[in-house]
Length: 262
Image (cartoon, rainbow, N blue to C red; front, side, top):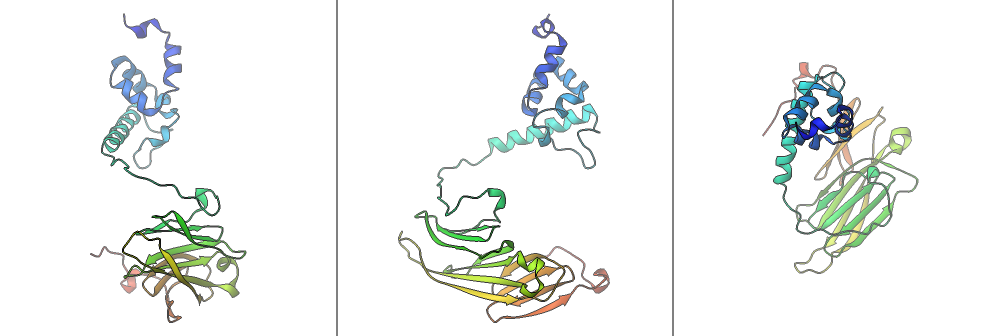
């Protein structure tokens, strides 16, 4: 008689239903009786508090996959997580920054990092630059009454400038104000550990043609590529020039077939 035989099956099920996937797979790999029980009852793994971590085959879900396949997928997921955890590079140093304003992370656009310059763009229209060496704020600006829809950022080849391109959300709803704003921040660099100094910041504004919607924005040197619903635009923000290329009805007939390039 084993210790499990001393417990009613209802108690065992109640305990298993409160375990996370990692613990369920661990006990199933060390106890034959529990493994049989977990594999037999799909609801145990499917009802785990963190069952969403189980990687399932395409087209399968926790409600339609059979119990044996679910156990196999859960075991594979935990095995991969264990290997990733064991090979994780430890963090040797970290720092905390005091932001100009507190706002939820969910409302942040992608954060850009160039050497020791951190660029944070808030959906609500706030732009912030920080010097990571000194943890000091270099620049903070809030767009008047506008949110930010699209954004991209880059560093100049000589690393003395950061260029930020943003498309306000107002562009989506107001045809008369369709534009991209480009901010160029220039810094005085030093070989020593002296703090960065923001010497100038300039604003370039590019007007855009009417379009049903703009979906993506890419910044590359002096060029901005904007993907719209009917065309894509290529603009030179330094010279305030650009061109518009409409999408053909059938891209394949025009030789525009996506392929990987080196």
